[in-house]
Each structure stands twice: as structure tokens, then as C-alpha cells.
Length: 527
Image (cartoon, rainbow, N blue to C red; front, side, top):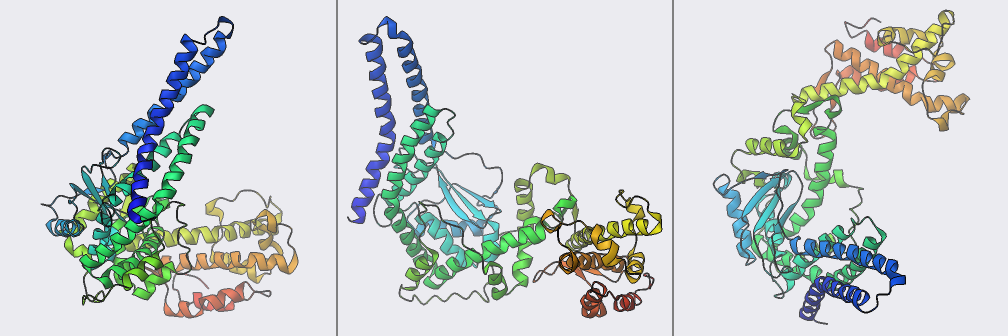
């Protein structure tokens, strides 16, 4: 079957999706009319009433689905993105309009900047997607921060290509129709009764048939959109943009988890404009290889059964099969697409005001260095507390048998010197280790197995206390480490010898001498 015939068949099935509701309503209307006028008998009045009530519930469900089908293309208010006008960002709008023109499509009426590594076009279509309407484009600021202008041009042209009739007049209609059908099925899935679920199952079955039938058309539309993107932005830029977007997505997830959210649990956020704007700094500090390493070993998200996007490798291969166009992708020296924005700091600040949850406005704002220090101190406290509590209980038991399991107040917890003294007295593996909490599955371990299980916790506890002492002595500084992992930087002597000293202190025959030697270099920590 030719591509054109597939598109025609998909359009017929799309119309049938709506007509299915009309037919079901007509059938139920005829059944109700026959029951009331021709088949009514007094002894069966209760059964007829039940049937009439059931058909009424079913009719309401179908009408709700038909209404959702007709309204599926309506644009809803946007609250989590920054609207930008041509007057505010003329250079960006110029690129958007040029990409739309390259696909033979009208430019969007509205442009929103979002916090996602994504670009999309939404359209208020009518008559099952046959008639285009008002358009709205969403463009992720992380994309602007990570793509050069030619690569961004490719992404923009591809998104407009979804709506262009690139291979057939019905290609864009099919893409709109798939979105409408998926939205309608979601509405039917919200039913609360068995009858509503039964009606919904009928529509779901029909929707699956439509999606399977239109899948080749949608896939071909994706390939066609890639080709128009290559004609607009260049073959090499388009292929490299396809490679870059998954890498940017992985880097952005890493940034949000490791940097932007590092101190949110402590009720703190980066300075205004830096929650999303800090991603620029991570990209600037890391090489292409360093960014790719963030996505290495990660499985690509499993595509939806009816996802219209072909495999990325297949898309790239088809682009690279195109003849060379003489436009090299000079990504190493080209500025990022953020250069298109006027006053990007203000844009990032505006995005925060829209995208962050309401309670975020009350959170304390700190510089990156201060956030790193807050997180480092919090982590050090968390690592060291189990060891300090266990040592306090062991010292109580040693001193005279006061309740070793009694709760210990923070002001009663021993410091690093007291813990080292307890280790020197042989209490680590005889008294302290048994009082460090462990999961249920490890509670039956004894002897060497128990010591090997608990040893990393003791190591971390001592490391946390060392960090706290060095910070208090002013010998540890925050290191945001955009190219690595944020934390605190220790003096060279500690970086070189700390791990070995801690290993000696938690060995089978603990020796605190190396650790005490290091501590002697810190003025405010007694040996």
C-alpha cells in the first residue's frame, strides 16, 4: 500500500472514531424508543427502567468523550513557562519564523520558554485536525544553552515539520489526529463505573486500530521532518543535533539532582536566576566527552508502543545518507543559542518565578559556594551521627552500666578526640560496632562478616567528623566542581593521606596514629 493510501485510510479511521459515538448513541436511542413504545409490559417495568438508566449513563459517557474529542485541540493556559514576544526577543523569533517558513508552515502566535530539554509546537486544530488554528511553540532554555544556532535551527524546523504536509496533504492531519485520539482515550479512562469502563474499552480498541494504521504515516512524517530540517540547517548540524539532545537531557537530569537540588532538603535554593541558569555553567565547564559520560550506561527511555519517533540511530543514519551540502557544523567554536536572547539572566529569573512550586519563594537563597558548604556539613553530620551515638552508648556502658540504649542528646555526643580515645582502648569492635544501626537482613551477621559489613559505616562516620573539624578550623573550602562532583576541598596533606589514615583506624587491629598525625596539623583540633 502506498504512503498516500495509508494516509487516506488513517483519515477515514479518524473520522470513524467520532462517528462511532454517533452510531452508538443512535443505537441506544432506537433501543430505548422500542422499549418504551413497543416492548413495554408492566411486569417487566423494573427491567426496562434499569436498561433505560444504563443507556443514559452510557450516553453521558459517550457524549463526554465526543466533547473531549472535539475540544482536544484547544490550547490551555500556560503557567509554568515564560512567554516572550517578538519585541522582547527579536533574534529568537527570527529563527523561529525562518524555520516555519522552511517547512511551508505559519509561524506560531505565541512562544514560551520552558525548563525542559525539549521543543514542541501545539496547535488549536479544528474539525478532527483538518483545519489548523492558533499555534503555540514551547522551547526549552536548556536546549538554547546546549545547542549552537545551526543545531537549534534544525530542531525548530523538525518541530514545524510535524504539521507540514511534507509527503502528502494528509501527513500533517494524521499527526494532529493521533494527538486528538490519545487525548480522548485518556478521558474515557477516567470512568468510575463498569459500564463506563466498558464503553471506554470499546474506544480504546478502536484507538489502537487507528494508531497501528497511522503508525507508518507518522513514522514517515518524522523522517520527512528530519529531511526538511537538514535542508534548512545543514546535514551535519541536523545529525549532530539528534546526537546532542539525549546527551543534554542526561546532563540536565544530572544537574537538577546534583546541583540545583543539592540543598533543597535543607530549605535552600541557588540565587535568583541560577536554579535553571546554573546549567550553563556545567555545560561550559565540561568537555564533550565529559558530558557524554553522564549518559553512558543509561538506558534510553522505553518508547511508547505507538510512539511516532523512529529509533535515533535510524534517523541519524538517514540524515547522513543525504549528499553533502557544504555546510560544516563548527560546534567547537560556535556560540550557543543563548546568544540569541537579550538579557538571558532576566529570562532565567522569570522562568523560576513560573516553574518553581509556590513554596519555593519562601526558601532561602544562597550562592553556589554557600550551598555546597551547607550540603557538605549536612552530609558530614549525617555520616557521623550513628558513630557518635554508638560511641556515647558504649562509653555509658563502660562507665557504670547506665542504660546503654537510652536516647542520647546532641550535646552529649562525643567529639572526634573522645572517639579516637575509645578506639585506642579497644572499644570499636567490642562495644561500639554492635551499637551502630544495621538493616534487618544484616542483624544476624557475627564475627568477621559483621565487622566487614559495619566497617564502611565507621569509615564514613570518622570521615564526616574529620570534615566537620576541618571546616571549623577553616581548612576546608567549598568546591562547586562543575566538571566533577560538588563537595569540599581539603588541604593537600589530607587529600593525600586521609583515606589511608581512616583505613588504619577501622582495621581489624585499629591504629589511630596516622589519623592523629594528620589532626596535629590542624591548630583547632587537639591530638
